Length: 69
Length: 139
Image (cartoon, rainbow over all chains, first blue to last red; front, side, top):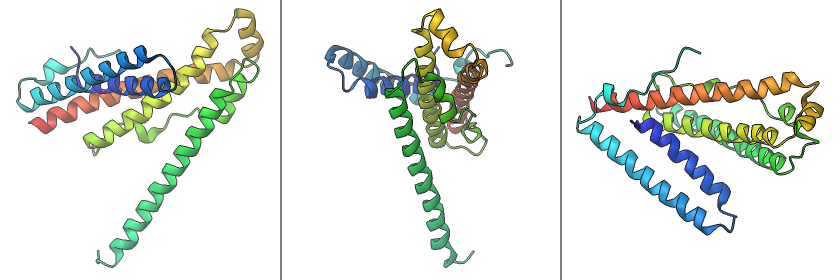
């Protein structure tokens, strides 16, 4: 399951992609990226809202921990 | 602390921030300029011009707020983006080009790959810190 931190990270990457594609003439790609951005924004809001209403607990949003690097 | 010292304190604080912003913008412009002029011939010059050390101030600390954590994550994401640009340049090289460019420059390549791994760990730590902070705020 995606966590707020995870989704914010995705959102930043999509924003960077939009920034670097602004000069391109590929409008379809830009529209697609913009839709991704909007849905990620909604997802962050939804997750934060659920946390605020205590519908999500630490166990629900704990990401699989990597090994100790 | 007297009220007279507050304006001078905030003034020095904002001047420090201003200097940091100017340096960041200068580094980003330098970075973009170098990446735009990136060719197989000058790729080995990049690591010398760009600091390869990880910015320790971007590590999450207990006193961070949600805003500062997101700001740090944003910085690390941009650094990773630029670092990946250099690594993807290597991806398009043929084996011959790679040996020509990095045959005697393995230390630089090691630094680039190590930085990509370190940035990814820093990014993961920041994402976990954001999740923990949000849960802490909700409790």
